Image 1: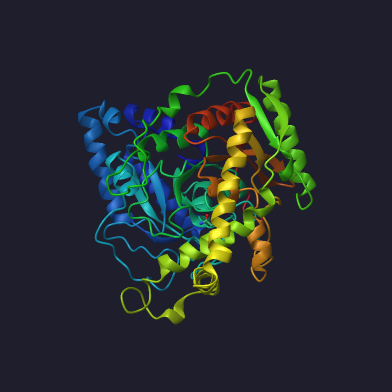
Image 2: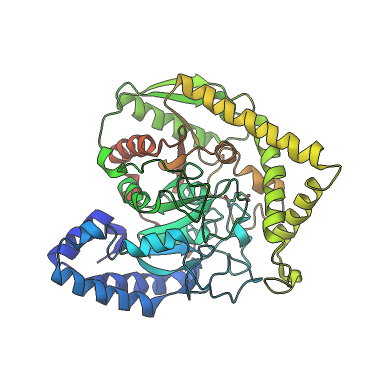
Length: 476
Ligand code: GLN
């Protein structure tokens, strides 16, 4: 058995037919992790004993009732959780040493939903501390490496979840996307990653980064698997008042439907200087494939794009400084000295932009720009159904290349942050491979258009099949 050769659908069929048991599946997951993780550093904590016990329990349930899958659609599926998903009795660090010994007394809503659906929690994954970063290098632990090339970053901040799915340790890795953190690691690790509409998935029990931006998403190898997991995790939650009582679509049911006549917009502001030609060419080729599938492509404009990063780096640090203020070593967390450089930078920046005299000049201005950016997207969606842009302006970069230059690092998210400012969904699907590295393509849609994004991505994925390419562990 080999997890990289399996999808959620395959696993359900095999468990029903008894091709393998849940226990065998979970053992395979841990043996793959033990084989690769010393080099990759995707995991901070493993949940082996509990996972095997759960698998044994599910094997007995399957023996008794083959229809158990109707009730538990993710039965037996090995899942890794980003370490800012609160897990009852499993250490939860948010990638930071400040709360390095925190054992939460409760599960986040998403965790509870995954467990109720039969998923097996394999472990907690490495990340940029508190979600601050684009490469995984801001973790307070060992840096996660990209399974396609161990000298390169896997993308952040959900770096461990991305790497763990990419090397076949688990089928699903959860993440949070405040400005990039599900889509970027998905793009750098040849995965599907969806940042849903803000409010589609509950944030309850997720350690907050910037509360008006944080969106909970998942990384998987295929579109079907991603859609299947979102069916479980999406929906209204009484513990999160920003979740929206809009029906959760049966995303998997629409996969395979034609996209004939669909209008795709190319925002001209995204295809500019700074975008690597290799990435740009890959996206252009992908657009040709989408045209072959029946879509039409036209240029559109998102005129306020230039202001997105500036607005993001005022609003997000403001919310960060407020959310991190509870870890002052008095109420929660260890000594404040233990905050890493990036967390300190954001706390200072946010305290400054929220202080009296500067609030109007910075915070309020940025909030207004946010509205303009949201409107840009709304206007574009009057002309087209979805937008397509590169996920990252560059190929996965080398470890150490940008870590000492925060501005360069921030620019990795230039095509991703605007989506969070607007609260709309964005999905990364693989556009192709260049020089042996994955290149991601982002499909952006209006609020609550997840079903549409999956539909487009699925047809593209079936046509191209890049998900069958396996990591080479280059330089390993
Ligand atoms: N890279 C972005 C930042 O550092 C976004 C991170 C995220 O989405 N958690 O703010």
